[in-house]
Length: 586
Image (cartoon, rainbow, N blue to C red):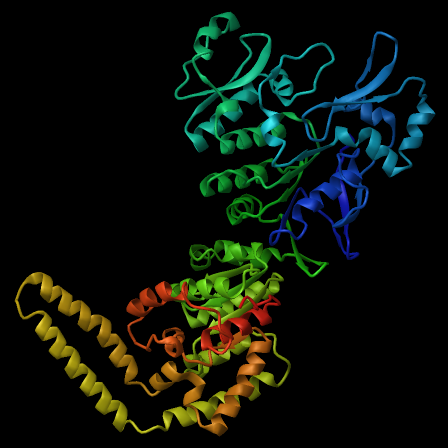
């Protein structure tokens, strides 16, 4: 039996994808995801107010029937005759919100057969029978109140649901109950109109519609409910009743909360079987996670754009599985980076908040996802995964990433370095470490003892009253400041505060060389020290107490002016330039 299926899609750079049952188009905003669906529609079916010029998709191939008889066997040649004897092909529009008719009076079998030799003619006359397009705008219309069907009429999706029978309606009711906690029922008791009614714990309706009226009229209409519920129902009814082989669905997550977006992703993956080919454009990691949860073999196409040039990448399923299946990467929503123009990978939660705020302040044009790697080691891992997925990214680590030779090598192993570069960088790091670790310990010991004595005296004064509350406050102070003092006792502590500025001329030149090579390949080593040193040149002194520092820093950064002579803004400019994003907001 004939089955319509898209077999090849040519993109505007000449590359091709061969879609399976489920194809998901992802990427940043305004790069052509929705346009790709409209291009496919324009090539596969009659024009739907889409310009003839395709922007993202250049060509589409699909399976073609060998004869009219194959179409007749599928019920795709529904012909009606008007009172004047004129005959028309009829069927629902691809947007499923109206009927489309083509005159066929006077046509003969050879006329029809000639259509099969021309894909454009086939698309015009038969495409609407096989392809459905569910945009964010038309989904509300699909399940709104409509007049009951007349003879020959199939212009509304609710007509199809009514004809499908109570079993199909029950499937929809059960899923809506799980996701939204409400009951939904198709009301045709008034005979004149079809509409959905919504309520809580709707009782079993009597079989005779005349006896249903009193119950149903007390329930609210679906048309008066929230956008999320109406959109969800529209998608469900379309895929259940529309009798289409290909569905183009734009932003199924629109108006939905994250758990509902995840569930609709799962449900759509379940519906993408041999009888239904589904193409989805989405901005939602929750939808993508749901899709991958049920269909790990989905084709994932990422679209990006630099200037006026589209960039396409078919994402590797193993890499996506790594991100979607790893509890750490899931908890930090690493998958969200797919939907941004670029990503900045940082060491911790405080870094996310501070550098995210600084990035937004530095460039109003930025579309950067700042992701928490939770530690230096995972920065390189996430960066490697992002690069494989075609996501522009840089990692940003503190100066003391040069402290541990084994961990530094792991960072380098994740970078796309040229042969020989890694060994040169390892040698450079060793030279810097040799200088740092050769510094005498006498001053560090003296400073540490003095700081601990001061801390203990402060804690003793704070707890002098002997009350439990003051004692707890003293312990909190010891724990917070004590960690900073102990960190300050280490040989690298001075460089956490001052960064490369604490190096003499020779070692500074080595660092600049090492830093330049790493940054060119996606890893920026903070030359100013660590997070808590970033505002020292605007009056916020370095401290080992990160919690206290970040609270002060986040309050201050909103009032700061972008000044490219200051360390923070110089760093942000470097980050943005590596990500091909303008950072001249000053």
